Image 1 (cartoon, rainbow, N blue to C red):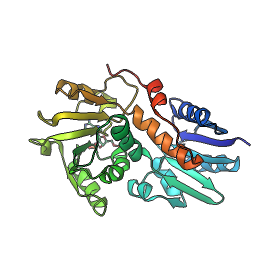
Image 2: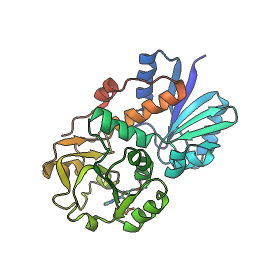
Image 3: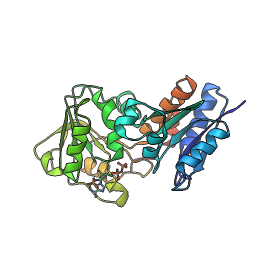
Image 4: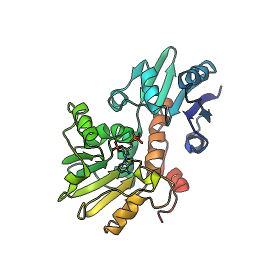
Length: 273
Ligand code: ATR
């Protein structure tokens, strides 16, 4: 029988996940279906329950339900618990396992696809919301020399530093604290660009050969990458690789088979112009 999977969010029509998992299933010969389900804003748990009763084996979860996905799990992973959010669920009998693959997806994209090792490097995350929470642990596990988080509201970055204290030594602060600092990898995890807003980045922030990475995807050259380019950065990436790599981790977790990602990333990529 065909195994059923889905991505659950609100809205969901924009999701590329059905396309990605269909490509993975075809390439690996796995017999599964993968659909997009829009849950009512006040009906996430009921939607998950209904999908399980219909025989669903697992689901991806996207905005705005990632925190609820972690809460309803009976067995959340450490990454999901620390992030306070999950983007993948697996159903086994009464058990609901939860994982957060956003961070490992980001790390795999940066290291394997883009060829920028994180070990020993100075890494900066912009923003202290859910996207940063999800990314921190896998980045810290690569052993960067410095892992810094700055946020418009500096106190939120400091709070993140306390939450992760047992796992990573974070440098935290506001954008003013970036004056005089230089980083090898700078990752935009804010939603500023979605509102068309630039970030207050000081001159000299990017080291020679630095990578500028924006978690948004499919938007051409977002404001943060435009800023980086104007500062002379040539290694620019949006989040399409992160999206496909987190999907590959979920597919491996559900099916025990790791799909190749390069071709799918190439197919979904939008030129950065
Ligand atoms: P997500 O789950 O996508 O991370 P979020 O939790 O709402 O979304 O977080 C959005 C992040 O973008 C926050 O770090 C936010 O900064 P504040 O905590 O100070 O609100 C950041 N952000 C949004 N608009 C911004 C802007 N114009 N300039 C700088 N940071 C911005």
